[in-house]
Length: 87
Image (cartoon, rainbow, N blue to C red; front, side, top):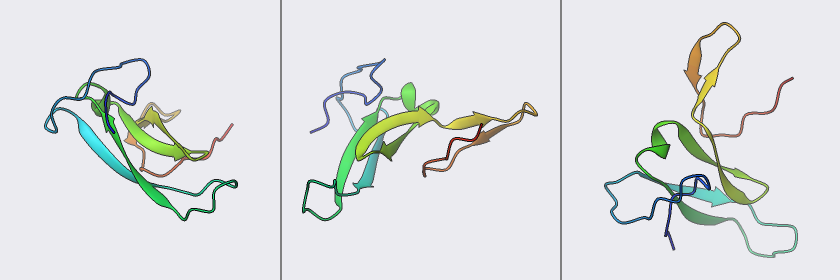
């Protein structure tokens, strides 16, 4: 059940659907679980959803920045899929 903003640094309590954004994402099965893929709800408050998005990493919902600043200084919106780390 949704109770607060997924951003651990925030903790804003979930009260109304109109305040923030709900994400409904598919979570891959873990190696220990025989369950097929499952879908889970995640919520970011109104303030956090302007700069963050929700992604699944290692079977857990987590936040990452919505925007990526390129070396040229250009800012682009990231897709909802994981972006590989490039050094």
